[in-house]
Length: 193
Image 1 (cartoon, rainbow, N blue to C red):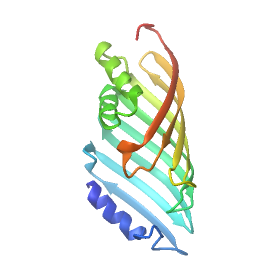
Image 2: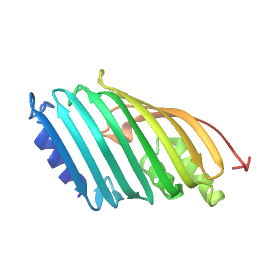
Image 3: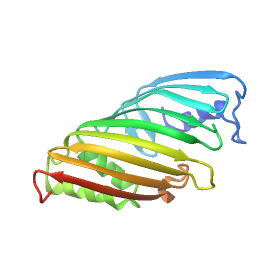
């Protein structure tokens, strides 16, 4: 399953005028796919279950596995579907070693310098991000022409514990132009790392 096929599926639900093609109806979608590729990023599998009623979108299940050995799971509840999404989402990321994932994200989001820093640290300290667990909680406001997503997170990476916030401003259609600001606080058994 690639991005063009996902976009084709989305076009069944949302018309070119950004209006739901199923307005006034209840819609449930369940999707399971093997290898998934979007923007040159690949994962081994994708399992999604969503419900749409009026302008409310509930993501009851999101599970992606094999993203550079990481798995991502989450749920979300969004209103204003599909034109002006507002709501909350939570997600968890698990990986035996998050270094490859951080390297990939740093390459895809060069405007987020902290991702490159995380990747560079992994090269200096192999095993730094062993047994990674990251919990995220986000809120999305789509009331303006430049949607804003705020995320708070806590993470255990190897022998370190971290927390922080991030703000993404801009649409996801052109992710390279999205503005990203982030804070990171934490401690690690090896102070140099």
